[in-house]
Length: 249
Image 1 (cartoon, rainbow, N blue to C red):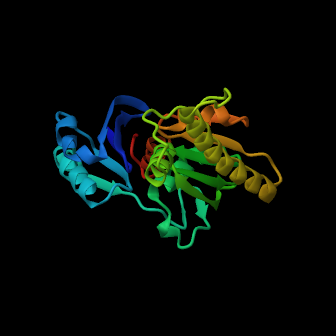
Image 2: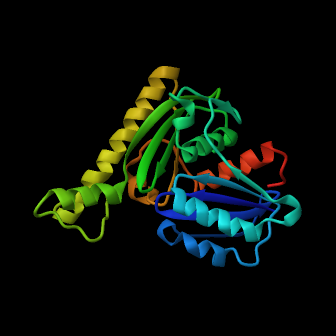
């Protein structure tokens, strides 16, 4: 059994699986990372694969939790990092190691799904939009604040914009909450559309969008191109990497 861990800015998500079968899964707020030890009580795994952009405190909590999870005979913690070339991805990022590991792992997952041109979109605390060619060339991407951060910036930078619940739909925005929601959604859509056009011009083909992240539902109604939604693209990529290294994930 392999434990996969995706530690992001807001949440730490995990999945225990073997031979592609999900045995258990869960998550905690990154701010409550100390709860991982309790969440993983009773779990045993041969190895763990971790993608983390969550910082030192969360990483230490993950490591402490894994100490009780991993079998004594196979105490393996694989903390992943981005690379110039690995797992079918050739990165043109400068330097290659500065690419967020969650973005790199998501690229691996997209490529393993199908060897086509992808725009890989992950909507969470931040939104990342990355361009991947059919032959595995990562051409770069964009990073912008996610929906909640955009709303917070408006509230902090203005005197009269206060939106407690952020929603977006395709109806006409005729009040302040819907104006904020649609404005943010269209701003996010613009980044996705721009990257899609840029990749299309580079390869001469229309790419497919793969959409993931906890806030993706906010953006989905505004995407008119072909879209594949994936619940946990980073965890999927971690499983691919585990299998590359010979584990029965």
